[in-house]
Amino acid sequence: MYEHLETAANPAGLKRVAVDPVSRVEGHGKVTLLLDDQNQVQQARLHIVEFRGFEKFIQGRPYWELPVLVQRLCGICPVSHHLAAAKAIDQLVGIDPADLPAAADKLRRLLHFGQVLQSHALHFFYLSSPDLLFGFDSEIGQRSVVAVLADHPEIGLQGVKLRKYGQEVIRMVSGKRVHGTGAIPGGMNKALSREERDYLLQDIGQIVDWAKAAVALVKHLHNANRPFNDQFATIRSNYLGLVNADGALELYHGGIRAKNADGTTLFDHYDYCDYQDLIREEVRSWTYMKFPYLTALGKADGWYRVGPLARVNNCDFIDTPLAEVARVEFKQQLADPALVHSTLAFHWARMIELLHCAERIEQLLADPNLLSSDLVAQGSKRYQGIGVIEAPRGTLFHHYQIDDNDIVTKANLIVSTTSNNTGMNESVRQVAAEYLSGRELTEPLLNQLEVAIRAYDPCLSCATHAVGKMPLQVELVDAAGRVVDRLIRHSNGEFARGDAV
Image (tube, rainbow, N blue to C red; front, side, top):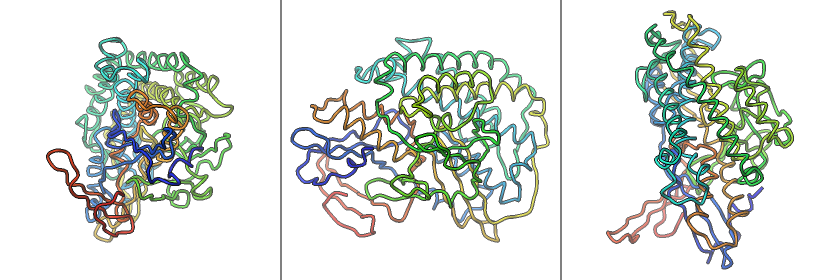
């Protein structure tokens, strides 16, 4: 653990180094280091500097608008917010998951698998593969998918086409690649036509093959420098995610399972509607993103990681054959001893999930019930709805309350990246302490901090939504770039002028 580097004991006089902004992630964030005269790192923080406030925006709106409104949180994973909101408003109209028409459930899953597939392909091939293919200290000009396409055209094109196929799945189900509509209270608003199904069937065999190749590629890259990759940015943590009733990997609907760093199950098949008894969130003054933790373990020991690594660690098996073979090999090679803690192994787990999604899409497209027009169920009104889903980056919670006029009166979102906040900060501190401290810092060395963050595939724009106690700093900069004035609202609500947050 590197929590001792969160706050320097004596920050006065320390040198400040900033990586601003963190690149090749969704959203905006920065890393700051405080160094002493010997370049020893005394403080390392990942700050999330943007602010959105959706929990406030949607109050006062009718509940049926929510699946469309909340997907504007993000342009990368809007489907995840769309479906989490849909599951919550199903409950508002009295429909539990088991009551949803089978065709509607399958259409939502198809939409979700398309979302996860395209998001995982985007992150691995566009954002992270340059680091893995060219090295963490490569020339800046090599750190893009353009360089991948130039030097490794087959890999680059497969990544582009994998992402495109996931987007086409989304378009066929929801009408648009980004910010379409599909889920409505109690079901779906349109059936998949035979022509749309046949269009997707044309390429699914190739997509499965490319997904297998992606798993082989990431395995090769990890094992090419195994001791370093096993240790870089690696921390031991708790893991949380959904699992199916039989313990299988589950991305759409299931119970919550959590394990500690030794692999011991902390709780299993926990009803996510009771999540407020399970999880609390902490606010710290130097970032807009909250710090969730397991209530029973407390702030110090209860933080956890979510996302592909957590899901593959937590599940007992994967219910598609190719992904299950990949999972078994992944655990056999990297588990220490029960779980895989390597932060860079997020990439490997992510490609296993990509393969699983391709296989599940192929299965669903072969199901004739997918074309059924029986898509909507009706029930009796309730005043509270909670929807939880496994988004590409981890477990996503949407919680709404409404009044007699069907107007939203309260909203709470725990977004996937938020749950990895402590993990990302710990990985940044591990890299700062083990690879940077005491050295003359260079741009390639600082890129290592970003490599650690990228492994989590954070969506920072999704994850900042709290209001009320968050600090705010406004700077006035002249034409020469000099800060001529600064106004600060501290986390206690007090205003000050001139000093830093």
